[in-house]
Length: 164
Image 1 (cartoon, rainbow, N blue to C red):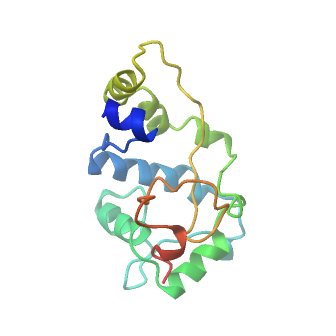
Image 2 (image 1 turned 120 degrees about the vertical axis):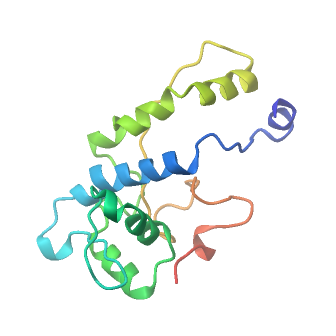
């Protein structure tokens, strides 16, 4: 890993298991996306294929909720999401204070596995944590200079992602 980092200046490693990633996605929806102060007709609603509204806090709805928000967006669903997407959708970086201090975000900052990789790559143990925010963007929206961590930068871009 270190050799690749020194040669390329970047490495991609899997540090979070799928279940933990799913928890983080739900946290972002629960604490940021579903908290926007819109009028009722513009608030984001996540619905299953039958039209039933899914509850981000319900264990029974967890898998269906994740399937909808992580899966391809058909034109109808995308139009619904665009009506209620966050104030920061053009830029992509939410400035809501909660985004900087969500429990899941802090857990990533303090993750021993990530620290171990970072110390191996840098050769240092005295690392600082960046207090940054998460970014929630619909595919094809927001500033292009921001890297989408949910896309492989070598094979997929906003323009060819799930914007059906």
